[in-house]
Length: 291
Image 1 (cartoon, rainbow, N blue to C red):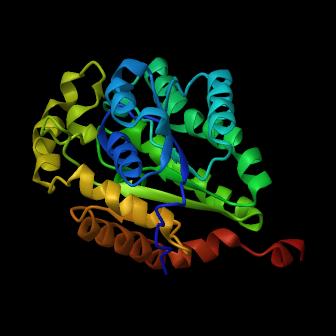
Image 2: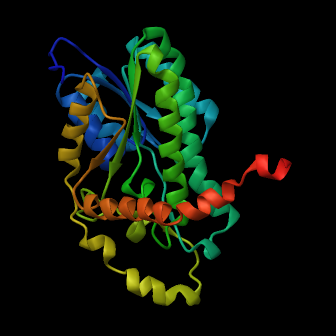
């Protein structure tokens, strides 16, 4: 069941990663129907066009989500500016690509600082306000990459799988306070430049080790075969999620990965079933050992 959005009911959003991509499209969609948005980006210059078009309805905030103190201050400013916060959209992201052997410690830290720790800081900063209101909705942009794992994307997958667990735990912790949580798992979506921003093709690349060149060649073009979605359509779908009385904990955006995920999960269940005899053996029997 969905609540119809009334023009005189203004909702207040806090959206990270608003400079481009799905975050930018969601901000534009929310503003176009009369909502008010605290839009964050690493530089507010990327938000000048939004501010010029929508005036006081948009609060541009310069924010690096890896800076915990800045995140808490930014969320506080948004709450003080609008009076309340209804929807928190954790969208800021970073994609580090490379084989596990190619990754440096800094690669992994940079990946997790943005995708995982940045999301945690936003959640922790917003929760006291949402809890005080007795209502709110946290939207976490994850990825189909949070549900499966492919070669050369280990760092990115680590961060997205962590977000899946983080938000599932969170959903149970905050339900009694009237706070909802939804993890959005997009496949590939086209940017305004027309490129498919799939991290396997467009992420930050580690220094290549030639021993993996063959693997790279075999994987080349895989992401390009997945149908690229329209970010504007995804933004409208996200509005329906936040308007829902009973939003899902998880939802896929886009069609390309669903058949693949069906096979991935079927394979996991089959493997567990095939090895149940060893699972039982591993459990052992403490009573027998005691005798």
